[in-house]
Length: 185
Image (cartoon, rainbow, N blue to C red; front, side, top):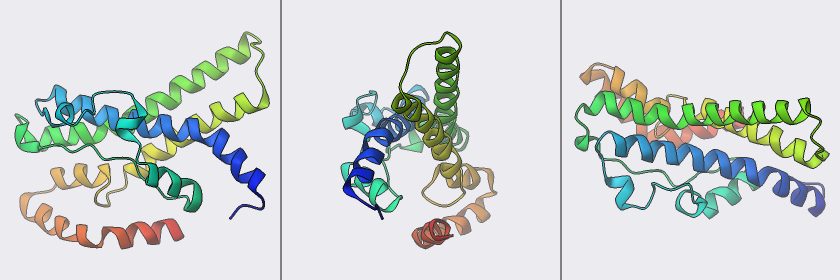
């Protein structure tokens, strides 16, 4: 996995900011959009905050560093609280990946501006910025896969006709197998 403890610690130190930012921004966006669309569940669960403690699952974060597959605390929503459940669930699902892409873009702009104005920063700072960009793009792409419980599956299910959506939901019990296959390839 890691050649030495130093390599593991370097990956942890440089990667942690990017991973935490990607997780927090993603889950916060889900919570904020769900709340704006009329579902107060995220507020009741204390998820309308950028505090990492509200969104980062410690075991999921550790697994991300060890086996390169992890998770955040998913924001629970109740689509029945939405005025248009199918449309609003799509909007909530799009919010996470969209926020990751926006975060990556803002980080890229910040990095370009720092370089343009000759702001002195170390190789480590450059690596951290690069990882913030990479992790946010990866989170956005991965979460758009149409595999339950990822955001892409919510979008696809809500776009399908009712009968096909029910059949698609049946696949959810096998979703972990699909995710393992994807991660192994």
